[in-house]
Length: 313
Image 1 (cartoon, rainbow, N blue to C red):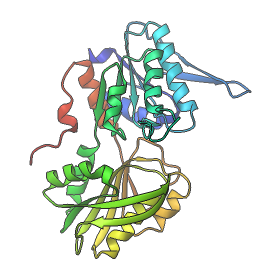
Image 2 (cartoon, rainbow, N blue to C red; image 1 turned 135 degrees about the vertical axis):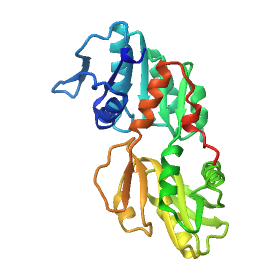
Image 3 (tube, rainbow, N blue to C red; image 1 turned 60 degrees about the vertical axis):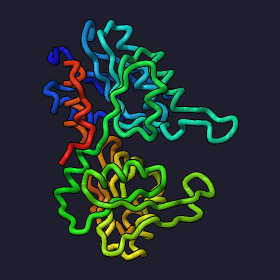
Image 4 (cartoon, rainbow, N blue to C red; image 1 turned 180 degrees about the horizontal axis):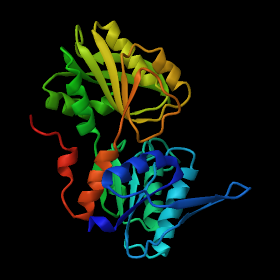
């Protein structure tokens, strides 16, 4: 039953876990983390979890201690005889390392899946994985949800007169096409060539954006280089306005400065990763209600597909 569920959090995502627990209708469970002088730490559940359904909320963005803390909480719950252990991972770190793109490198996202399974996790709930195939790296169920329901409602509320969807790269074509189909509009693609990671050598635009209010859709903004370059290109091609939407605001390096000085009228993100600073251009939409609803349905063994599929208009 839903009343048996306990929601806990690691330190990295406590701000979001509190909102999820509040939306779910239970207080956030009590976890204490003891820090030692050498940097070692020990998380512990400060309430009984025996025979309970446990949901542990923790994004695994750097530093690696965030992943380690999640693994230790899963292990602690298993050793404390929890009935079921579910990891709610709003941002699944290392997801971009999902294949061998050159010799002698790790497939780190598969390694993380192995570690979580070895620790004792029995289900994963996450949102907008960088690559869908990562679900296949797990031998336990993965509830992979999407931010589309959050973003489409917000896009429709803006009532843009000449809406056009766009992808900042060819890898996001499917995502942009899905939004375009749902919103009954067209889409364009930015084709980029990289000289090395986080550095673009060349970018071209496939499609016409003249007079359009363009929305760039992506799952991650890291340094902000690709998305801001795509925004500049779109405006140079005659767009009326350009905005960016992304699920995971990694925002490393000078990303905040790039966004602040960009052509974007607005950058819309979710709260899967905490913001380091606030900017007038950045709007943060919460995923808390969506995660809370997934938790409720998981406990009642109800379908969650309606939460991430585009609804027919």
